[in-house]
Image 1 (cartoon, helix red, strand yellow):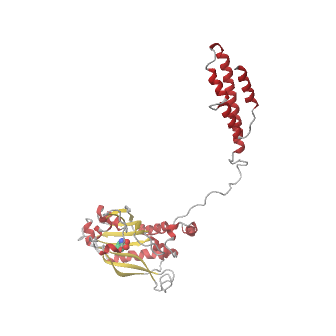
Image 2 (tube, rainbow, N blue to C red):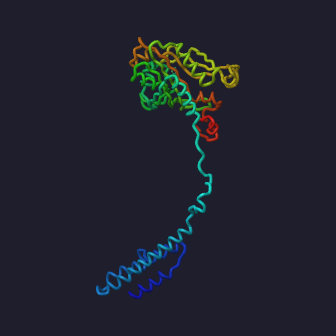
Length: 340
Ligand code: PHE
């Protein structure tokens, strides 16, 4: 046994494999499950007690020598193959591989701009869930059950009474249920309608709706507020006009047009030659809605309005296809760098 130990020690000392594979092979040969040193260690159990001390020390020395040699050679071969960066001069400028800074999405930009205009008029921002119940989207807003007005907005239903909100008027219901007038809120949010996707319609879009309720609020107040908004948003020279319309939750109701900011009202392709752009729905809150939400309709009146953010952004930036907002093509998004 003594001579075999000495022979293996010589073998270990002589070994000079360089490649990582060779070193590993050598380790298996020596220290692996069926390795030569492992076999000797097994045999050692049978050695006569009086020889144990001498053989044990020698065997241990062999094992340590083999492990050290292998570790050393492995470390060297790893160094040779590692691909890590070598730092030659840490004071040199970087490689310029840092990723480009992002920009804000045009929808966020326009939402921020609209909210700031109403913030200056004293409106606060209210939020609400995207998954809503029938009452908050339709019931409390004066849509009777089975009423055809429910078809104005093609709805995604989750269960019979649970749906994806089709407008952020649902947030206004939540505000009226929990607060008493004076109420002055704007409600931004994502809304969902089951519509075929095209350059001018999408099944997901964003709205901002507003609500003002107090004693003695009149149609004239609404008109002046919306004129102020149009001038802030589209320029000092903007004019507005209100056309009669219908919504179950407002009476009277109107569509608001703003004079085309591209041609100044003379007529161009964007306004289809009319000089006007339709930008929002509005009206005086129907007393039935106030009553359904626990507000005294004898004492208070109010107005509401709602607009699509995509549409305002299209008009403001001349975007011709609504789908661009959802594709997140950086070439499109980078055009708004300067607007941030
Ligand atoms: N909720 C309406 C819509 O989504 C917009 C609107 C809001 C109209 C408030 C009038 C008053 O189409």
